[in-house]
Amino acid sequence: MAGDIVPIELGLTDGNLFTLWAPRWREGDDEWEAFLGLDEDLYGFDSVAALAAFVRTDDDNDLADHPQWETVQALSAEELIPEDKHSYDLIGVPELAAEDPSGEVVAELEDSLEITRILGEVCELTPITKFFTANPILSAVTVGTENFRGRDGLDLWVRIGRLIAKHWDDVIDALDEVVATPTVDAAALTIAVAELDAAASAEDEDEPEFDPVDPLDDDAEDTDEDADDDEDDVVEGFWGEVGIDPIRIFTDAGEFLTLRCYVGDDATPIFLGAKGTIYGFASERQLTRYLAEHNDHALARVSTYSDVQTMANAGELTYDVLPENVYALPGLDEDILDGPRQVDGKQLDLAVELLSDAADFAGVDSVNEALGTTTPLGWFVDYTVNPNPNRLAPSGPFDNESEAWRALVNDFEERLVRRG
Image (cartoon, rainbow, N blue to C red):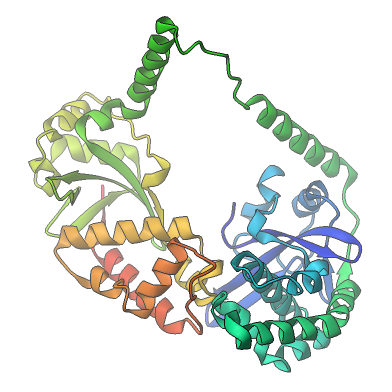
């Protein structure tokens, strides 16, 4: 999915509607945020298929100038299904606010209020912007359940619920008035419906079928063990045998392919590089050629590197990068500005792993120091990677955290050098 344009689902008066949201992005010195629509209209569709059909056939909308618009147009219909965290039951917010302030309830209310606030700002809906500016106590939901403990906390929760019950109809009316559903190309809709049906059928076919196994049947047990052994062989392969991993890194400067391994009892990270500098390559061919011709790097000291070089000279190396070895750095600093609930925790966790390993390889303490649990960035990262609705959340604004993260990434990028 194009990370800068997100499919979302909004529960409004006429039912659940599907649209696209582009969180804040920069063009030069300007910062923008937008939803799929045109002028004063917010486009909403009653199905993912209709959304997909419209996106593929229409360039006259407010997102058409977004840097990722062409990427979104090329997505399959299935990839436009909103994730659960981007489905917002706005019509049900008053009922939600009337429940007890459990961690799950507070988190869901925070998400619903936040997307509503953004919709109000982007679509310039005065009833919504006034609702938020006139009621600053609504921000209490952004720190989890901490504000709603004890008698005073429950009183605050009740006050928030009453505010929502009193004014939420006006909020929904304002949204309903700007929602429009444009005409969708019939042929494109048919194609999108077929894609979704095929994806659903494929998912059903992929459901595992379990055969009953007699636990006293020794042959059955042996068969299972043999299957496990075969699976391990597939997972391990050549790179598993030599204990070195191909990794892929995405930065603002482009895509890099390189190698990394861990050695010793303390699992010290060793990259393909020297003196703290990591060598990255634009293609598998360039990397293979380099491995075949060079021994003047840190990875050459690893005992199994000779096997890698032999395979490189024979032209038999392939680089199947596992998902846990793919690191995407662009955009995280901007996501951090929007708070922990807007950051992809898995992506951030992987990025922290990469920056920490690279710092260890270079022998610098900057990453460990910046990510210590006593620092604002460290607290932010720990909360995002290990979410817990019953835990006190970091409070914004997050400009300092974003700047600190950007500094770590800049330092890493300066030590990532393209070779080939």
